[in-house]
Length: 275
Image (cartoon, rainbow, N blue to C red; front, side, top):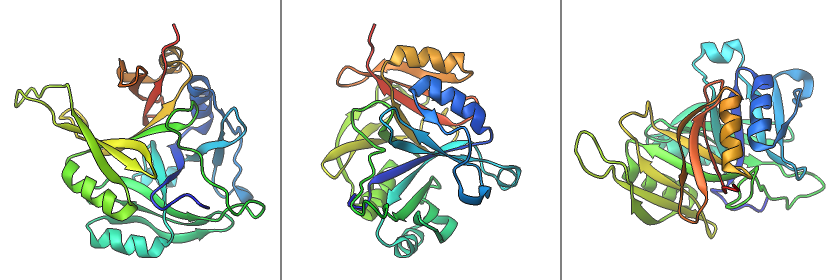
């Protein structure tokens, strides 16, 4: 794989009801999630999220009762590309992060681990094994402008300065550019802080912002590209999801929203308004 270290190379939805999640996201985004597991031997229920162009947008893991009993919850997670998973786990834990799933190998897929940043926000790191017939294959699950891809990665955290330092040092990102957030604090009566942009490999990949008082916890939110924000908004509510904020116009003329899917996973949408 030729994606540089620190690239978002995979996104994964953890859902207690993959069939219902398939129905929801197929309608909202235009994906065609596999109707059955593709995991060898059926050890877990893991389904590919298929885009209209025939490539994958990510995967969907069923949360079984054992996972739920151990505290797993419906959510979207991302995988970041690293060359040495074990060394990076050691560096992250030395820097205040924690290990949720120790490094291990998935035959034919790669070596990966689940970790948290020092605030406690989880994500995966992974050294994937490229297809045998395409050793230079790149991941294209992230795109700055295409529908059915993840288009934006947004970290909401209680420690913006600390986490910008953490992620830029460990994954080669850069923090360049910022804007004042428009929402006012009911407590302090002033701006809620800065919305600070993240760059990697010549692209603007997302941003870091302070956690709002009403937000339950620090987290990554991944914004999925859609062809028409108004069509997708209607599909969210028709499918049993809940709109938390938006749609609102964003720089460049497109629109974004934040929502919760019917199983409880938070996500964002971004796309044009066609009407």
